Amino acid sequence: MKLSLFFVLPVLGQQFNNPVLWQDLADLDVLRVNNTYYYSASTMHYSPGAPVLRSYDLVNWEFIGHSVPVLDWSPKYDLSGGNAYVKGIWASFLGYRPRSDLFYWGGCIEFAKTHIYTAPAATGPWTRRSTIDSCYYDAGLLVDDDDRMYVAYGNTNISVAQMSPDGLRQVRTQVVFRSPKNVGTIEGSRFYKYKGSYYIFVTKPPDAQYVLKAASPFGPYTMKVLVNRIPSPVAGSGAPHQGGLVTTPSGAWYYMAFIDAYPGGRVPVLAPVSWGADGFPTVQAPGSRWAASYPYPGPPRAVKSSLGVETFEAPTLGPDWEWNHNPDVSKFALGNGLVLRTATRTLDLYAARNTLTRRIVGPQSSATIELDFEGMRDGDRAGLALLRDSSAWIGVQKDGGEVRVVVVHGIEMDDKWRTAKMGSEVEAVPIQGGTVWLRLAADIRPGAGRAGIFSYSTDGRSWHTLGRPFVMKTAWQFFMGYRFAVFNFATKVLGGEVTVRRFELNMP
Ligand SMILES: *[C@@H]1O[C@H](CO)[C@@H](O)[C@H](O)[C@H]1NC(C)=O
Ligand SMILES: *[C@@H]1O[C@H](CO)[C@@H](O)[C@H](O)[C@H]1NC(C)=O
Image 1: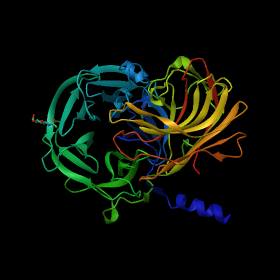
Image 2 (image 1 turned 90 degrees about the vertical axis):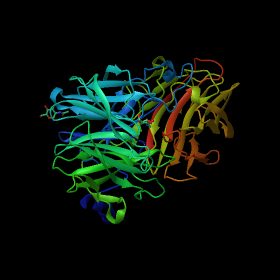
Image 3 (image 1 turned 30 degrees about the vertical axis):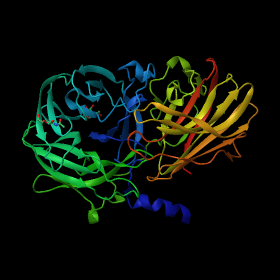
Image 4 (image 1 turned 135 degrees about the vertical axis):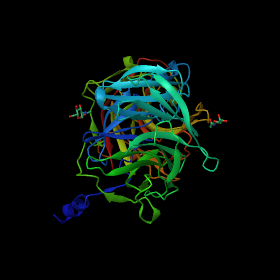
């Protein structure tokens, strides 16, 4: 009884802890519709793209869908004739238009065109409605009180576009603000209206947020700093920046920003905001620090956790899952475990199609799969990877009739995201039978030296560590953080398959 009381107390105190959601969900856009909050994030080369999360208290979030069902802008998003690593979905907008009861998502792909998708509900179905022949780089949407729609976007020179009444085409655009020399690069626009004034929130990467304020959407804007190199509530991470503003049903305001927290990626932190007499917001940061905890914005309400067991009984994948690039849909099946038929013949994990990923939950979590490998062909490799631009895996490898559990380290990309090294065996053991359990435990607390530890089991109960710990890279340039990734590829001939009977994501 004493023990359970101890664990219940923080909830009774109604304090929440930062980060509110320890998963890689950068470039966030956050909004409230009625009593529900929604959250969108960048996903680059992962498919489906732009996840939508839902919350009823701004603290507890669940995945409910994706705004971009398939990355169909070029064959390289299928890993065909090249790859799209670090391309695809960058900072985009998620918005809601009350007059038509429609959700809007818009984003610029590869600095070229902007695609706009809509959905009758945040859960979807999402469909592409238009393509604009210019780039709304780092776009933020404002649906004004009079139903007019505007998009703020750009880098350093910030523009505002006014959209057609359906929100799908550009009517006019102009530069509304040029960043002063002493501030320099600004981007990541989010667009709001409060008490008749227009606000564009912009980040100065990687550690500051500024607010632009004007009486009209097209300016002229005046600028004020919101946060600048404010210490993070998470030891070892960068400063909170690049976020958005959201209001609760009772009229309180919050700023949600992200922190650079590699190797895990970029994760959101939340803090209350108050409005000054000058009409600019201020983040409540006692002692000029972003606090580790604040009072709950409203009554806490639990939602579906990302943790737990998946047995792939449904005919479609849940919204917590994303593929590395678009999958070949003819090469996997669901309903009775996840059947992965080899989709690519390659020696290169980064070139293999149909690698299925999950975000690592921080500060530490593990992924475990039960893998039926009876259908593997000679030369096949299937297992569980710690996936980023410097990767490693544990898997089953079949070569010339010999089946082994193998740990491979040192799979590397170069700075143009081309494969530089395909990795080498660190340790291996022979294996019999047709089923193996593979586990990958990852520590993604920000900082150098964090590792992933691989282990296997032949009965699902007793575990054996295989290979030395794999130390994860913390450079930010790949943007996306490390993920758990389930893969199956052929090195000799297609036609083999494995079945993932069970996937479990757990905190230690
Ligand atoms: C919000 O509430 C209004 C009024 O009840 C309703 O018409 C609308 O569908 C709701 N929107 C969403 C997305 O829940
Ligand atoms: C901003 O606009 C000015 C004037 O047109 C131009 O000289 C400058 O290169 C632009 N800066 C960026 C970052 O686009």
